[in-house]
Image (cartoon, rainbow, N blue to C red; front, top):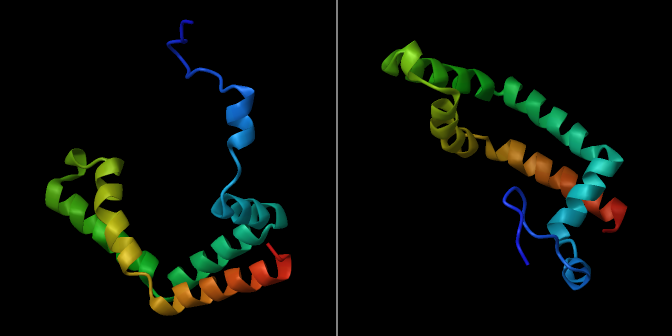
Length: 111
């Protein structure tokens, strides 16, 4: 049997039946279906703006662009530098609030 160059081979029926969604996938589906994921994302955006995190990330981007020069920086460069710094600098209080909201959702949804 020859496989297609453009796509992987189609899984057989046994492989499809054995693929069960993980707990993480189930929770993500429930969050999306209920609209809670979008509400959590909006809350996160608000909290990050309120605490100045968004402005800090803008400043970090500007500093990198000034250092390397506007024409020498790509979006991928910015993402590569900003992502670890951004994740590490999210205040613990915001993480705790989001975690509590997710726990409450899971209890109510009885996942």
